[in-house]
Figure 1 (cartoon, rainbow, N blue to C red):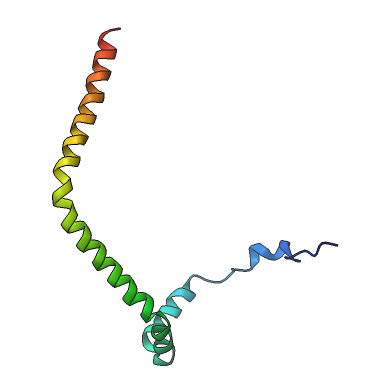
Figure 2 (figure 1 turned 90 degrees about the vertical axis):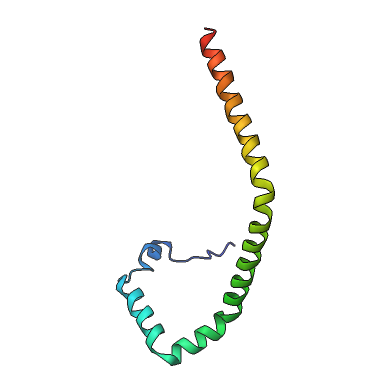
Length: 95
């Protein structure tokens, strides 16, 4: 006795049949209608502030760490890249 969780799979392709212009209408209503905008902002404000704080922390950490690590990483990358090129050149010249 297995119950099918989706009793009408043949209707699945038709569920999202709406005009893409509804997106523009939604953005317009969100920007002009305060009875929609205020509740949406109240719902999203915490995530927005949290994202800004995490982004600022990330930028701060990267800008302090990058000058200390960039020369070492660039030098290591150059040795790695030129080492591979030298090996390939020697390999092809030996044949």
